[in-house]
Image (tube, rainbow, N blue to C red):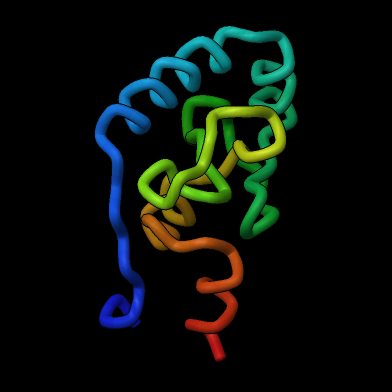
Length: 94
């Protein structure tokens, strides 16, 4: 699948958005999501320490660190998703 995904990442954009993500992790909004403990992708329950922040549209693909583009997910799902969009994940499963 990676043969047809072209990624032209902008390192300045990624650095800027990663800083925004660090700030977002400190908000009550993010802390509430962690406390719920549910992975956005697989739906299983985890402790907050087992969860990560995932950008639905990856930073390398132009995504931003805003509430509408970040979700809580387990490390396994985050590793499996990598730089893909949700649509690409679904197509890969077909």
